[in-house]
Image (cartoon, rainbow, N blue to C red; front, top):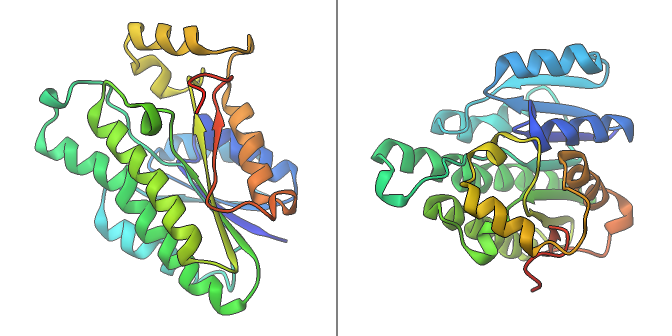
Length: 241
């Protein structure tokens, strides 16, 4: 049974991805700092083929040990979904030094370490594997939250670079969602920005976490075996690029 690691798994896109992966027969290793959310997830899905871990990716000791610790329990892993992310939805002038470090760590630094640690171990097997990163339209067209936009742009650059670094065995792709309803981030987006996102959409079907999860599962599957280094927009046609 293929094993997939999903960060930020307790809510929103992460939770939807857990549900979708379980439905496709994956064994899921779900990580989040929301322990209550993980417990709800386990209660909802049952613990068969699901393993949960408390993990705060703003803490460097977690970042540098998380993947190595998993390999103490698992001989091999099939895929990594880097979904955990922070969005404060405020001006760069209002960020504290602590918050700047926190967003940088969760949104980008964690991806660097988790990805390289996963790739280093799995490339030894000479078997095909997959990494899917969750970026954002904000990383492509900008954001009123400069820290969020900058880190999500960094995820795009990291995705493309690691597609080269980890070839030929590990494919690295990213999904770039637009305005996703039913998430914690949605409620923090300023009203004028939400209106702008919605105005740009050309499809009249609100994007939900499960819609993004469907694309993530596609990128994990053999059906996307010829894709690497790609940024797949899930945005109802907004911001053509």
